[in-house]
Length: 144
Length: 87
Image (cartoon, rainbow over all chains, first blue to last red; front, side):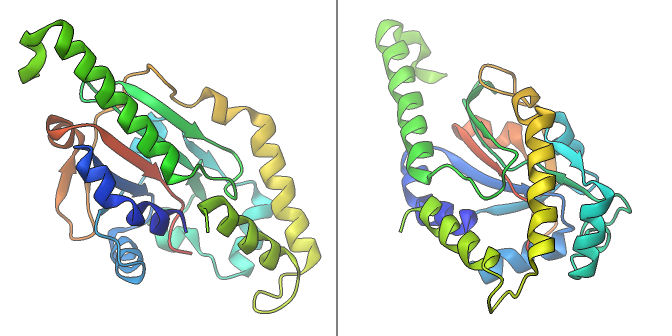
């Protein structure tokens, strides 16, 4: 649902000069399926082994009782992820500026609560307003 | 409908115990317990936040092509969304 909502604002993200990627621990075969099913036009990246997820501080291991429940539902994360551990990312959305600094972060323990894409667009607009102000006060930054 | 309204509607349907999901009450309680424990762990607050440097990455996309954050950032700001999966 979140990916579809982000797809709906992909043109606006592009107009603001930004890119969008989604990252999940799933093997890339599943990323392909997600992308096709939801008609996504942005890249779905596969963080098998959750190294990048971990670098952002987002990886967590499911408690055994939840792993059991998921298995009973046929949600075999070991197969989806290509690792025996049942680990997942906390749902998170980041806006990173051109210098690689995090401008906005929305991280939650509750996967049923997600920020509206409009919020992300507003954050991107804030970023471009900032950089225009910087350029106005120091025109040599215009190339940067 | 706004994203959160869609999520709320889905959650209400999923947790109702009725079709199409038919999820037993006990299973819903297990999921609530796990979310509550994760919330209490404070991990969301410890994750990277505003003003931190975003870790650089290079990961395969759906076609196996390696996508690097440095290349994306050379073009402009980057929105990254972390999600669980297709299931």
